[in-house]
Length: 197
Image (cartoon, rainbow, N blue to C red; front, side, top):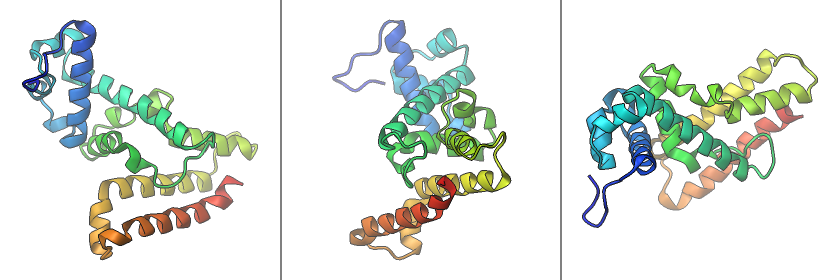
């Protein structure tokens, strides 16, 4: 429910926005399976019946939440990339809510939800693959390009999902963290340079 100083959302636009925001947060925090209509409505501060009224149910709302997060993520990464078709390494931590939602959906086997960025045409990875394929004058991407893209995406997702644990197992102190991140970025850039040619 809204905090003591917050008013409950009223009107279609405000209710939809509150539900989408709550669903986005819960997708990231607990995943699609553990997210309930009542939890979403409670977090949004609205009646749970409005989920069905505006989105046709939980799955419709989760799809819309993922769709909006995918578009926001795409635009944010494009801004971070300074016009480069391939974003710099380790930009995923900048948008943890979206990536955690994708990871949770994938782990739970909800690939329809996880693949929203592809279906919406706002996949940073697919755009990079298309760019590299066209740049090399190919009709289709090679297995090598696909493997390189999968590896880079795995680094992004793995780092986002596991950074605190990775620092623990590598015995990285708080004052060393930024230097370690910088070296990981540098290593990734070095590996990526031949691919971009």
